[in-house]
Length: 295
Image (cartoon, rainbow, N blue to C red):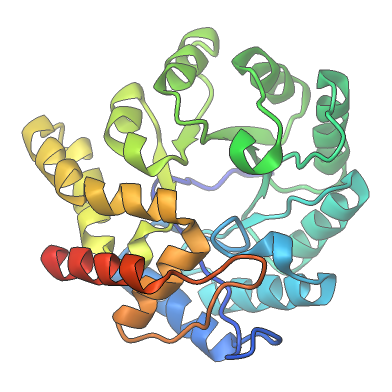
């Protein structure tokens, strides 16, 4: 098993729906993927929080996964989120993604009952044993209901051979520093919290997993380029210029804000699927103003 070089700006995709929200709009999905790749992102991540993977039927999830991988067509690596409530369902999704050509799968241990550390470890072991792909371990307690300690993350990293990278989205920069320290610099990690982008790169993050490139790709890419060039002054200026929008995206909810933003930029992708509401008039106006200021 070879691990692709996942780095830089990893763009989340949305899942477009028809006007009534009842069916997928694959044409709009294809356009949104092409826009991200053409903008210069370094990888594509379908079916995460922004992609509303939790709100899709199994048939819809399969359709979006297969279509997305085919549309990317190897132009950049694909990191497919295969998270589900049960281990069996996550294994099915991981195998499906591998069969259709995904480069990496991302696993968030979703919880209804509170899981023990042993149960979380067994979940990753089962998924790892079922596929030959690298796994990005994803820690995001806000959506999963599980907050994995750095010690548990390292335990999983060392116990499951194909868990080769970690996405950290708690919003606590100390987690990243601790991961570097206790992992002795051997654990590739990625930032999943928009307002921490600059600090995360400074802490050693290999990349930034974000929905923002759907709306402001050049600013995201320029920030990464400034980090690589070790130009702290430029990186700070670029980060603080985009920070109000990054905060807005996070607080407003990824599917609602990104879909509203894409509509403002000329790509109709429908509204989020219920129970998520689209942006109200006031927040939509605020988003339009911010996007206009960043052009």
